[in-house]
Length: 112
Length: 496
Image 1 (cartoon, each protein chain N blue to C red):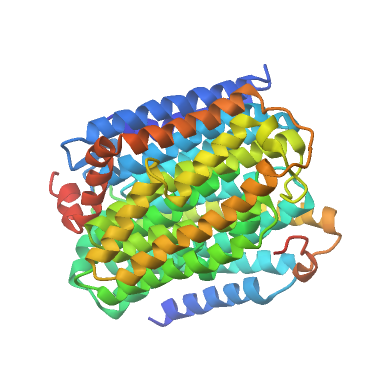
Image 2: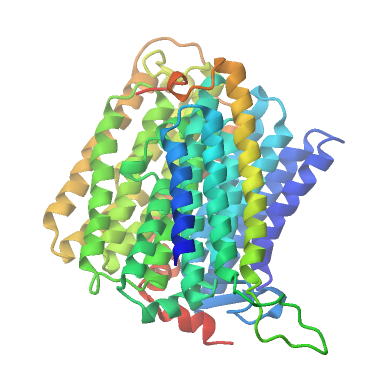
């Protein structure tokens, strides 16, 4: 239970960074922290202490193995995370070219 | 049933082919894009025909039976969503063919457009939770890139805001998926619904529902979480604005939340009245707040953005009313608002294409020089306000009828009364852009753009006049699919 709660605390730390920080790069880091928190939660859900790899061979049919599905999910989530992070960083580069700043509070051409 | 994976495979294949072929010959990109969207439109009609008489079609990937493998589950509500998506994607593609003349790198636009379509189709037909998350992220990432397609300062800022909100919602959704998997050890939606029956109304059940609903209401831009939409939707090129406002927020926000509330969590007005009252409250707040804010806007597209928030409130209101008429009204409203708002954004695109100006106070007199655009705007606006025989009337009428049957007479009066506000802000555009004599030099928009607009006008009229068959073959089965509740489980898992 403790490990689940610590993952959620990590998620909230990431959320805090996204919401409260003013530097765009720190917001990007906040997103990464949120994403890693969820990925770690997934990995921990599948984990069983003392269990072995879920590899079934003709001789051996293991009965006590870790859940392989969360690992597959984490791989997919990592790939999606790479996509969003790359896009976000490229936005940051473009925004720096246009606004000459990374401070969110100074990026406000839109209002109403 | 082979058309189910084709709904995904076809646009995905086009997205792959467009960058390769457009190096050889530039016009390949719009040609392939238009052909793909047209074929999808045909498929969606076939889908509606195929679903008649069957409650559910299931396509199993690799023939693995449902709780093990990934499935596509296609019921009448999915068929309906695919129909709405394909209409708006088709008209948007037609419009974009000419509209993109200002822009460089057109093949990038078409690739992203196809990916967006893939994601939307995937969300509507998938029967697997994690699969749904992947489609949501694919369409969301494509939309972030498309909103900033012009890479001007304003567009980048809008897209940044949109992406921050969208990603917070996406990560919350992923967290919810992790928690659901921890509890139920399954990702199949029907299997999750089955597991939830044993823990119904527990603390875990409500907290998961809260997480999911937070994620979906950010995607649907309901009022406390709406502020990214009036920046993001106007910043995009007009065909994308029409796609985002017309169908994107409804698939990512409304379709998903309706699916979860009714089919997975098994909630109805009878067993959770408090929860449904919250939905009514959220809907009402969106209608009132965004409707009034829209009245003071001066930017053509930004005004329409606020209008979208307000109109999505009507859909949530209909779902929250929760009886047959309310839900049927909400479902019909998805179609009616989708077509009319897409049409309005296309008219804004054609005004911007011709004059290069979005501030309605600097425009004027376009009613004479651009008659097709002006009349398209009028039809779209009248449907949005709810004038018979256009399709918007029936949607609003059903929602009001549902509210009265449920004993909320005041709700029906507020919902109908706020049509007056809708009329107010749309008249503001009509007066300033089309009626006022200001002598802005303009000529009519190019032929293909007019075709796209006229196509949507004809749909508004035809679907409105053919209300009875539309109701019988599309709306009523879709409503039944939602009201069927957790019967959904047996339809997927029972037929193994």
